Length: 76
Image (cartoon, rainbow, N blue to C red; front, side):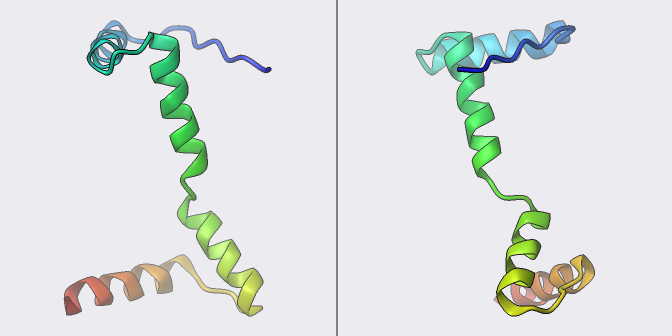
């Protein structure tokens, strides 16, 4: 299985991650791996727009998507 090594993590960031891992009852490796997996599985706006474009065959601009989401939120 591939691995990732991250160097030069700021001490304050390391301390927060270490504390959160401990509170979750996980090792630092387990905790950070979980964060990476969650991040990789969450689609970006670009991913979503690309999927929509592939389904409909028409391009939806990010500006249109933002305005549509904003209008939907305001109507609630």
